[in-house]
Image (tube, rainbow, N blue to C red; front, side):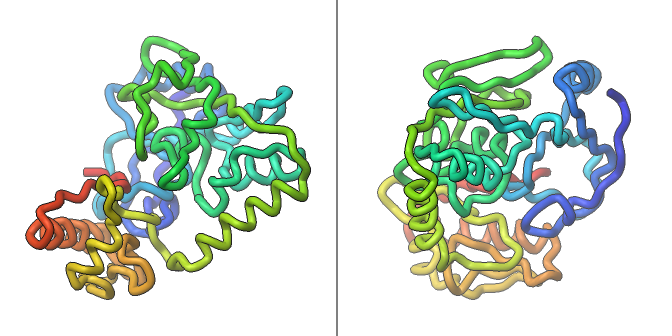
Amino acid sequence: MREYRTAYACDMTTMHCGGMIARLYEPETKEQLAELIGSLDSFIVVGGGSNMIFPDGTTDTPVIRLGKGFGAIERDGDTVIAGASASTAGVLGFCARSGLSGLEFLSGIPGTIGGALSMNAGTKDEGIMDALETAEFMDREGAHSVGKGQLSSGYRKGGFPPHAVITGARLRVRRSTPEEVRSKMESYLLKRKGQPGGYSSGSVFRNPPDRSAGFLIEQAGLKGFRIGGAKVSEIHANFIINDGKASAADVRSLVGLIKQRVKEQFGIELQEEVRIVD
């Protein structure tokens, strides 16, 4: 599996900024992925691009995005088996149709199952790793199957080894009815209805212990603050919005300024939730 193509990062990420990706590989099978990993000295893995910002220039490090061959979704009793390239929305739709409850908290969170596992996506109270039975990933040593207890997961951290490519997971669910599942999904969507629209990567910073990153940024007087085409949302200060003309440099500069101001005023070092590729 050595075929690749060039791509624009702005077309692959929800922030819609960044330059050229020189080599984008899209393997469709585990055999192709194993061959690819074995042939590369380093690589970057991208899913739905909802939590990643690439630089403005050319990214020469190879980028791997799993193809549709890793997107299967099926049921095994009280377990949903989902490939890493399956979208969170696709998995939730499957659960709604099948009357399977337990993953509704992912409603409204964009991206893929692989990306969700990597960052333990969810709410402040629960994440996808709480529902994990086993996860599958590949690295240079081969294919691995691990349970939640074998991973050091935590808040916005899946705990997978460096250079691991997540390929799929078994997620625990409960039998319910389609009506009840849809009702729970709608309640989560309603809570997120007030979140900012437009081009963004969702929450930029992790919430510090017992604090809200958005509240700290707002108290630092940065709501609506702009650098170039990137601005702090006036609706939710932990969102940076691209007005359609922002460069990755604009976003990075704004991230740096936010961290500096919050550190100066509150003595708190904010940690990025979004991954900024050097």
